[in-house]
Image 1 (cartoon, one colour):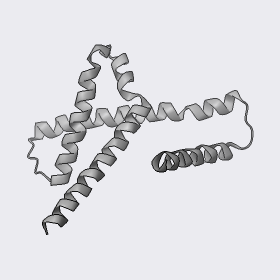
Image 2 (cartoon, rainbow, N blue to C red; image 1 turned 90 degrees about the horizontal axis):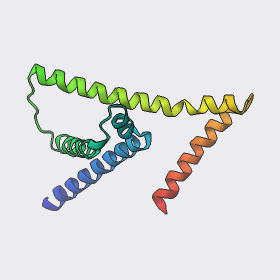
Image 3 (cartoon, rainbow, N blue to C red; image 1 turned 30 degrees about the vertical axis):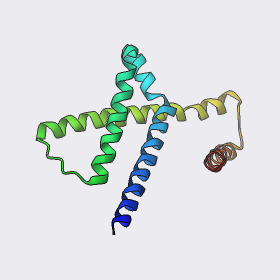
Length: 136
């Protein structure tokens, strides 16, 4: 029984760390943190940004894994909602900015046909690259 619980704990921690690493890699790929630091003229505090992201991800994993009760007042729920909204908004805008590259490229090279083929090639390239990185 103890071995089963230890195995489940290990699998849960590894799964949470994997998902968190994927989210952090996605955020890093989009360049949200450097862009926020540049726009707010707080680039000298980048270590604080990084520490806040790591702390938030770690505490979030622990909170979800152990299903800890979180008793918040109405004010704290509103503060959490504001910060969550800011984060989701920044993530959305960075993703939208990244996706804007394809239409600009199509207009610059004056592509008339084959746009679905380009999108499919990009998707296949991402899948093949991910599989190659994962297994090799």
